[in-house]
Amino acid sequence: MSHFHKIAVLGSGSWATALVKMLMENLPEVGWYVRSPYTLEYLKLHKHNPKYLQQVLFDTERLKLSTDINEIVEYADTVIIAIPSAFVKEELDKITVDLKEKNVFSAVKGIVPESLLILGEHLKKYHNVPEKRLGVIAGPCHAEEVAMERLSYLTIASKRKSMAKKMSEDLSSYYIKTTYSKDIYGIEWAAVLKNVYAIAAGIAHGLGYGDNFQAVLISNSIREMKKFIKKNVDKRKRNIDNSAYLGDLLVTAYSIFSRNRMFGSMIGKGYTVKSAMAEMRMVAEGYYAVKSAYKINERNENPAKTPIINAVYKILYKNADPKTTFIELTDQLN
Image 1 (cartoon, helix red, strand yellow):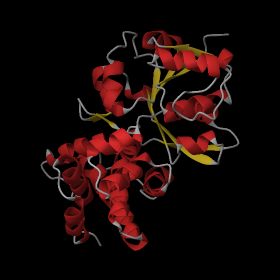
Image 2 (cartoon, rainbow, N blue to C red):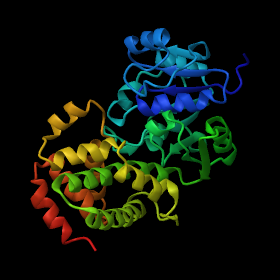
Image 3 (tube, rainbow, N blue to C red):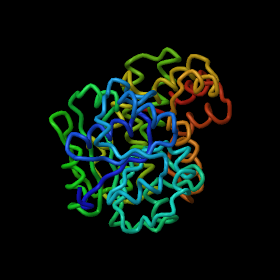
């Protein structure tokens, strides 16, 4: 097999597993870094991930599996990072292979907590990855529906259209359609913020608010997202109604597969953060994202008005009462 065009996925959660499935529709071999030796051996023996998307069977003869992140990064021309944001710095710090000549796509949907940066900015600052080699893979797309091969859409963002086009070809199939965008930072931020708003939607559901309020909450959320990105990312014109922004928000706020909505619903019903996380046994990216988004906005000399982010932050990090906080929030929405 020639060295040309080898792709690897870093991470072994549900989204990483879904990405490997999509790539294997088109590629003769896919590299896959899994941190756990147990997961690796289970995959080899049973042909599926032991924890996530267990119905997806893999031809392991076509997988280059390793628990050595450097072996997999060295193997690949293009690397897709799909590690939860809370653990991504720890994993990236293990990399000794030079990333500068690799095309690196973020599929993280979260902020690196230690640097308060989205992954693309973190890679540029701490791993010297040039902007022209950075890309983003965004939704609206739930891993569970990819596993069921339900029609799903991805937005592939990159400054270089040729780079995005190649990734689109590698991910596309009869159940995956793709669109292109140059807005790598705006789309990555939208993927982060929609998880925060999905937690808000879940809290509202847990508190007993109905569909009428949810409609108001989500319409306010997309406008708040636009203000946040404009103030804290850049002022470029972007159509916030596009699938990568509004579509991804809608599916994350309403879907039964949304772990962030589920997490928020448990908080609204009276669970503590710790007990909700323990029962879910999955990472709700919005929990980490809201703290970072709140801090980033607060340090801005002219911060965006973000009552929904502020409310979720108060509930999750300041032990504010969800019921009282949402009563106050309702007076700030329109």
